Image 1 (tube, each protein chain N blue to C red):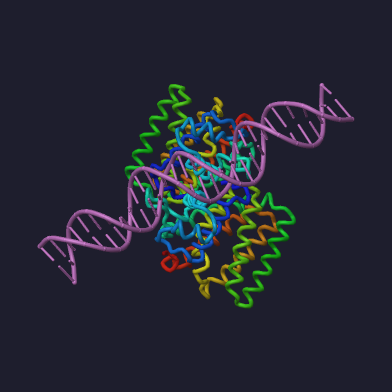
Image 2: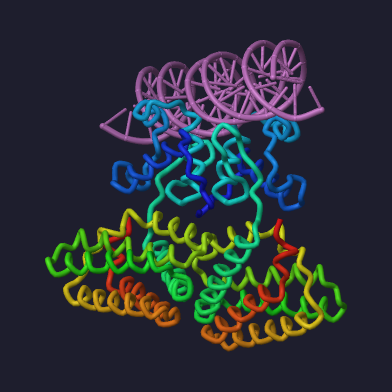
Length: 217
Length: 217
DNA sequence: CATTGCTTTTTTGAATGCATAATTTGTTAT
DNA sequence: ATAACAAATTATGCATTCAAAAAAGCAATG
């Protein structure tokens, strides 16, 4: 991974295609129309095809010999497997973040946390989920392990399409909020082991509570 | 990830470049000579450049705007971080493999294990390390989690260059062998928790025993 | 002798072109 | 009307070409 941030054409094209897939503009299972996208983006096929190679590696599309690219479907199994790995990576992040989190990172996470609580109290689920997402990523970043961060972000992006389709049930939501409070407390105490445990439990609950049937394509 | 196995030109080119990097034919930090490699491989620049995009994503090279690709250096920190993540993924694999390993997989792992022991007794370190590698991969595969397998293999490939440079010290080697025996026993007992713990400990020891200074580039 | 500025060469990024494979369309026979 | 086959169309994979950027070479100046 270790993507160097740079404004290459193929990079921008990849980003736009990712967005289109996430937003449903490109339907899973359907073929990626090279020519049409080229016209839409105003680029030639070369950078577009380079982008498809990267997207294939990221899991967004599948390349079929002499048949171009198809938008890959997220099956129930893949979603489950992805969350299984992410759960583990988050737990590791927690363990590491306990030792390594900086003061400014901690402050930032606390701030996000309080914003999230506010949305919870207002019952604003969309905003809540967005903040929730940001907190989890911030904890992973606090692990200070570049490889871990890259892998996590990649996996997260793979399931981006379905992340927000699952609604939080009325009995799970308060539980999740409590877990988040535990997280922040563990982080404040720089207790990596406790943080790892909370995170592990947290995502596990999320997977169990989510209706994977609804998410799969 | 979820790479579809297919014999595309760019895929073959990527594989050859990976090998060249692993074997040191392409020096870390040096630029990747597109023209020269094209002539050597007998392909045009299009598939070669597509391969470079994938390799960049895999972490083998870095793309610099208008300056092509450079073979990425494996720093001490990156190696450490990679092993840190791999250790966690192996532990997860162990936990999952305890429940999911099939009889034939178990048999295969036992076979590899005994072969490895034979090489240990003969003091044949190269062969030992190869088998060791295969056993670890087999355990990860036994997790039956495609995403986990892909991520693990990718990370493993990233550090392939340095994997075999570190020699096992005379006091670590017997310890590692004992841990491997524990692994097989845990797997036979289908005790995922125990297997996860052994694996976690095992790679941790390996990292601590290895002289990262020697491995870094 | 090192340094600056200019010219030439090489390399890169992306568009275009071309041969082949796949798909669609059209036609005919049943 | 439908099935089977053939022709036409389209899409794909890779090679080639072209413009722009970077690197190398080289002379003039201090």
